[in-house]
Structures are given as structure tokens and as C-alpha cells.
Length: 412
Image (cartoon, rainbow, N blue to C red):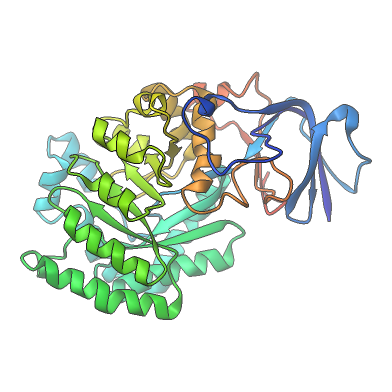
């Protein structure tokens, strides 16, 4: 089956030989073609160019006059599978409680864990399915989803099975990350090594037996998992073929980034606090820094210092951190806009961070993140707009006209 998009006002993120990622000054370069066409064969990008070289029209033609076309967003950090919500904690923060104070009185991650373990797998799937459909409609074409609200063998397996069902039932690339080390359950509050033993000796073998995860994660942070504890978890994950993608430097810098780089982590995520030593550790590494600006927006903490990091030659990816406590939104358009408004990234940098670098941060560089022949035809078609600068500028307006996944329209 062939589908031809014609009269595209501007085709964004066009790369004949796409790199795995873009870094430093190169992040400000966004290759485009004006007055373009794009040909899809089956579920892949087959060809593109200017309209003067457009091939004969197949049966299916989409006229994109006045519209921009770009690769779908690649959201490399979400907690989309969860039960219920934490709206009361939202009000608690308005009334002056900090994230740490809410956690210490049984809220936060432990609150979500309690709700999840009381929810059946089918009910959890139904709640999560609706969220996935929503983010697809807002342009996300590849997504990473973490466990981490089970904190028991049964609960973590339940979450990962739901993630697998989503992957099997929807035409979107889904990567699953095992985050048993999200917090210490109340029963292990004073026995950290006992809980880590459970992660390594019980959870990991059960997950591997069902082939439920692609990556392993931990909340490496003061008051959560120490550098030494996270190092142990990363090394255990490696034994089961799970590369690390780690929460780190959200509130404090305690040497976590250096440990992640030493363990070959694919990404380090949050980075609201970044030291010069952290930047040096990331230089020339395979580890992608990932910023989560709508988390900073929602709980009023500092933003990842994007300009400083890019000036040092680093790459940067953007993701939502979609979760019930600190970022109850999976809208990547808002992430891109917030990165421009609050982190002073220009639109070219933000789009690169949310597409090609986001794909890298979940191991999808070969198939997603750019307009490249042979990559998946996961595309956003905007409404008629003046320029792609309007995407972050009109941050409260839905500028998406259509979304294609695997070459097929999923919204219209």
C-alpha cells in the first residue's frame, strides 16, 4: 500500500543519513524541505523531496497544503501505567507541602503503589489504554513506559504485563522499563538491602522469564536509592540483558551521573541539578541526558540547564515524565513549548531533542526520530501554520491536524 503526502509547506527533520543523535551546536540545525512530498510504502518512509520531483499519485493521497509534517514525538520517559491519581497531593503542594514532606507521610510513590496493588490487571489496563490513546492523538509515536508502582513481585509483574498488552494492541513503538527501585516499601524502610535482594533475586528472574522488560531503572536520589545501591541494581540488570536508564539529579547531585556513565547507561533522566563534574562525565559517553521540563513546571523545581549542557557539547533529549504525582500530562507538545519558554532552547533544538534524541534514549535510532528512508512512517501533520516556530509559541493550542502511525491515519 502506498500513501503520498503532497504540497507539504515544510517537511521537518529530513536526514538522508540520520545520525544516532545530535549534540551541542548541531542541535540548533533542523534540516527541512519546503514545498515537499513524502511517499509511504506500507509502514515505512519510502521517498521524499520537492513537489517538482513528485512521483505519480497512488490511490491514497493526503493534501498537506499550508501544513507542516514532522516525525512523531519520541517520549523516552513515562510512568503511563498507574492506578487512580494523586489530585489531593496537588492541592497539598499548593498549600505549602514539599514533595519530600508528602512522601514522608505516606504519599507520593507509596500512595500510587497502594492504589496499584489494590487494582486488578484488567482495570489497570483499561485506565492505561485511555492514556495511551490520548498521547498518540497528541503526536507521540514512540514511548517508554516504566513499572515502579508495584514495589512487590506481583505488583511489578502486573504493571509490566499491562505494558506488554499495550505494546501488543497498539501500533506504537513501546519500550518497557523495570523500575522496582522506585522507592523502598514501608516493610523495607529500615532494610534497604533486603528490598534490593528482592529486586535482584525475585523480581528480575520473574521478569526475565516472561521477557517483560527492555531496560532497568532506579530513583538515584538522596533519601531514595544511593549511588552504591543503584550501582548494584544496574549491574544486576546487566546480567539479565537490561541496560540502565536512571532517574538522577532531580534534587541533589551525589555522584550518580558518574556511576551511570561507568555502567553504560543509555540515559540519565531529570538533571534539574547539574554540576561541572556531571557535564565532564557525560562528555564523549554513550549516555543521553534527558530533561523533563513539565515536571519542573508542575512541582516548581529548577529546570535542567539546557543551554549550559549544549554549550559544553552535550546532546539532550526531552520527555514528559507522565505520572500521577509530579507530571500528570503526557503531552509532548507542551514539553517542547516549556523547553523553549523556560529552558531557553530554540525550536530547532527542542524538536531535535523530542524526536531524534528521544529515539536514541530508548534504543530506536534505526527506526524512529527523523524523516529518513526506511524509518517508520510515524508522522505529525500540523494544521495550517506560518512556521514551525508556532508549535512552541502557541503553547495552549492544539496545532495537530492528523497523526499517522505505521503509515496509517489514527486521528483526523
